[in-house]
Image (cartoon, rainbow, N blue to C red):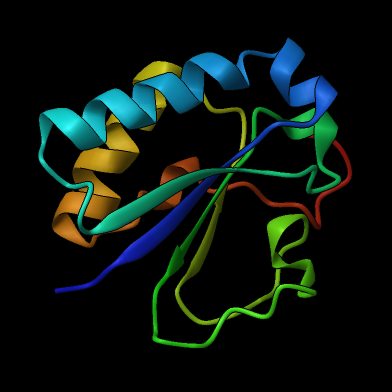
Length: 119
């Protein structure tokens, strides 16, 4: 059974765009589906894609030891098992929890594409 770390950006632009409600929806959906043991929810720093927010990053837990100086809490790392979601809403977050976390099926059509100029 896979385990995940789900980070909801808490940068000022994402917060202004509703990231607090997205984080609350993630917390509530994880609880309702009894998935807290499979998914650690936290508030990450700014990922630098403010114009695409609210932003959510999900990483599969692989047992890799966390480095407290790692930039992973505020940048995409390109690791296997990493998914970046942009323009998130509470409704989209509920779907991501149901499909990505509960069923281990990332919701590809909701992925953000940070290499594109403007979304």
